Length: 129
Image (cartoon, rainbow, N blue to C red; front, side, top):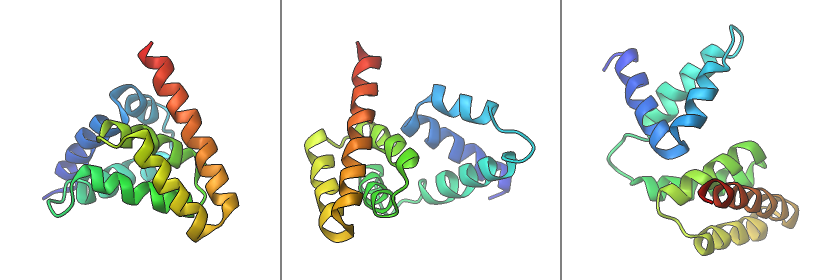
C-alpha cells in the first residue's frame, strides 16, 4: 500500500471516529511546521493502525483512553473520549477505565482524566442539543 493510500484510509477512519468537522479544521490549521506531523499521524496512527483487522474500534478506544490518561495527555484524552462514545462506549464504561487509571497511574492522573472526560461529555451533550 502506498503512502497516499494509507493516508486516505487513515483520513476516512479519523473522520468517522473524531468527526469530520474536527478533522477538517485540524487539517486546515496545519502550517509548514506542523503539516508533516498531521500527515504522519493520519497515515500511521489512523491508516496503518486503526484499520488493522485484529482489534475493533471499540477496543482500540479503550486502549487509547487508558494510555492517554496514564500519559497525562489531556487534549488527546478529551478528543478520544468523544471518539470512544462514537465507538460505542458508555459513560459508565469510560468511568471504569478512568478509575483504573487512578489506581494504576496515580490519583492525580485519574482526577485529570475525569476532569477532561467531563468536559468532553459536556461538549458532546451541548452539540446534541
